[in-house]
Amino acid sequence: MSEKVILKFDADGLIPTVVQDSQTMEILMVAWMNADSLKRTLRNELWHKGATSGNTQKVMQIKVDCDGDTLLLFVNPTGPACHTGARSCFYRSLDSNS
Amino acid sequence: MSEKVILKFDADGLIPTVVQDSQTMEILMVAWMNADSLKRTLRNELWHKGATSGNTQKVMQIKVDCDGDTLLLFVNPTGPACHTGARSCFYRSLDSNS
Image 1: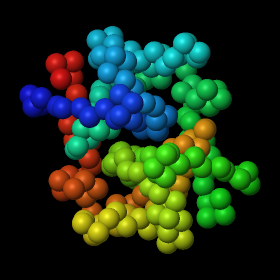
Image 2 (image 1 turned 60 degrees about the vertical axis):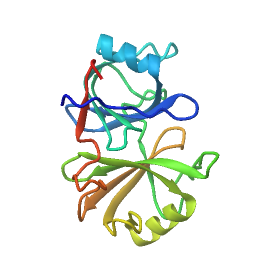
Image 3 (image 1 turned 45 degrees about the vertical axis):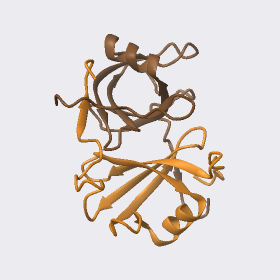
């Protein structure tokens, strides 16, 4: 779309970002990006997940929600998304006893 | 899992919640839930999206991320998730010109 998208970062300069596997459609993680991190990701088409893990994720597409305060990244993961080593951070179910 | 999950709500008492269509795997929206809203959802297996839309979403499963500060709801939507009438709030792409 040619429409200029205005993004809304929160008071800490961050925007919540859902990371979805572009092939399996599994949600891998939710992270908070700042403007610099987003700029670098748009430029490189690669998200460096942080110095600790060294993992990168190839970004296939970025979507933004209706009110511009949340991002959705479609990625091809090159390793586990979670710091525990799990493929996805959402490996636990919540039930009504929790 | 039998492990007791400790949820972390933010300073405003909210937890970011990704809502995913359990059949198409499409991300429909990201919303912020409070503890009451989550309790009601766990009890009723139904998420009342707010008085304005009147829409409800049947909750099939709730997952929690590794550090307990984000939820993932698998739902069967009974109507559009977005206040614009779109099926998903993520109907816009962001490119490097944005």
